[in-house]
Amino acid sequence: MLSKTAHSFVQLVEYTHTYDEQLSNYHFSKEQLQFTSLLLDKINNPNVSNTTKHILILENRIMVGYFALRWRKAV
Image 1: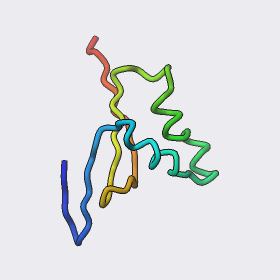
Image 2 (image 1 turned 120 degrees about the vertical axis):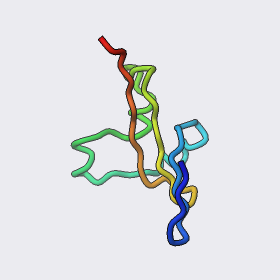
Image 3 (image 1 turned 45 degrees about the horizontal axis):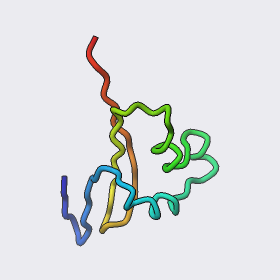
Image 4 (image 1 turned 180 degrees about the horizontal axis):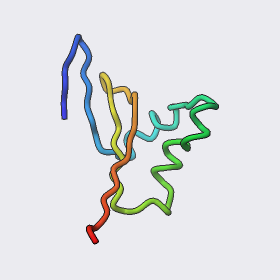
């Protein structure tokens, strides 16, 4: 998904190891850390389902956000 607005180029991309340096430099405030974990810790957590897709939000090729999508089988 691509969007171009006011000289800003925004993309959603699936995580790959090529983004590890940017992820390791992405810091949360103390207040934010009480609700989440460091991104690489979350992505590399062996307890996270293998059906989880880690999505990075890039603005002009710089990571500005992250979210995870997890699929479950219908019961």
